[in-house]
Length: 339
Image 1 (cartoon, rainbow, N blue to C red):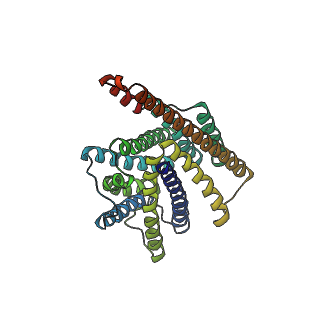
Image 2: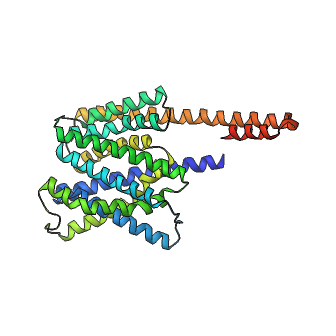
Image 3: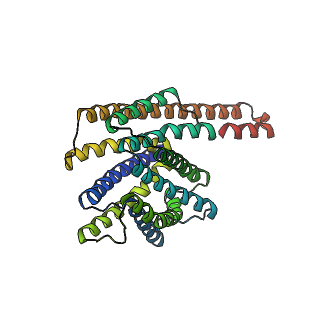
């Protein structure tokens, strides 16, 4: 029971850290890009990952965590995949309208559910699917204002959805199957993510903005905001791996839409962005969907725990009532029940 309480507190802490850091970095980057005129999003992300790796390397030297060797091929492919997914998301935003880009982000949840159902044989109840449907309707109504389609933008959006879903599923799967922590996985994969974006970032940004990151005139205030963004990004990257590892890719996406609602609210409060009744209604519907998702997840987790406890109790009862029959076959049966 104590371990379960500790795990639940860890999940709550990871969720809070993810929300707080993500909302903070969105506000910081919005000020950097919109107000200060620094439009190089992909290059900025590569700097985020470099600073994250350097921070974790210092933490490793001070023994804040233990480095666990992982197969180089696995880490390299995983890091490159995540880096490529970031590039596709930025290209999708550049080639599509804001509304279609938001639609792309919404499509990540159902596609993740589909992939986990097909390849990982994971089951999602009707209640969970209904809650996700309500959430997507709310976020879509609040954030999607236009849907302008074009062939190249659609292809880029599909590639962004596929690479993002696979990357997040692997983030969860690698941690659990290799029994490594989120910190260990992030430390080993961050250099590869940073490398792919350092190479491709300036090219992607120049293609999208028609400006060169190398020709940009960096004022002290811009440099200050870049450094602040990089520091916040350490927390964002760490909490992302932590949340996906402790929960699931679908839960992380649900949390992402909570961040969207909070960003809309903070944008109105702090930056005086326009806020309509459509935004309010959509956010309220999304909150209802998040509440239902949380409620159904908690209930299903409790039911599973009760089922596991009852099956373990039955095994113990069989052991005590028929000890003479617990030969080799009985031992195998017990192991199968516990698994």
